[in-house]
Length: 335
Image (tube, helix red, strand yellow):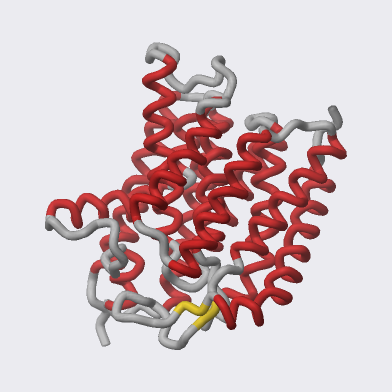
């Protein structure tokens, strides 16, 4: 096996970015015709905008990662590739015809199950737990992570502001020998693909990812973080997506407590409330991106320090930082 280097990694990022941008540019007229997202009371956009550019992001990610894997003789799990394609097709169908909630959930669960239950038995996070119980908990967490990435994809550049710092941190951890190579290849290609998509999604967005993008991105990113946890770094795996986890999970519990239909579209997330409270879209995205850079730095520090004391300090620091940002988003801005 030839291990990836920083030069080949940067080349892969560039190729994935160019591929993603080219496919997005090519597909946009077709999406304008068949997959138009029209604004409603719960939308953050004001004009009809094509959705479905996730086709470009996911295609570029898989093509570059698989080609790179063949070149360096690294095996990316076939179950992950197949599940990613299937869940992307589920998302595409939902973008066009809007599938029933139960159908979507069952198909998502099948895709996550295929990834989780085909992993080697020695891939463990808490070895004291029975394997079946741990895998069951990971399955539930995986389904939630896939959906929360979808829920949080409600503002121009929001998913870019999340995925790019996380995948860049995963690439760095891989180059430092702290992550499996298959996960490094996926994370690197996904980072590049999101960068290629970014110019089309900057405010005001010309095209959206759609479920065809957010769902498989959630699956791929969740698997990379799971690989990090299996590599003995569960704290770092929690730190990297901490803002997404906090915003979406707290919002879910609030909606359940208010007996709302938590599975339906809404504008209750902290980042959505921020725009309602007078924050501009660039400011919200800038705050989230800055927070994610901080979380990435804390995750890398945790891994490299290898100290329980440092881990506890970074977890506490990240929790405070996330709460500060969410509280700021919740407050009305002075005119």
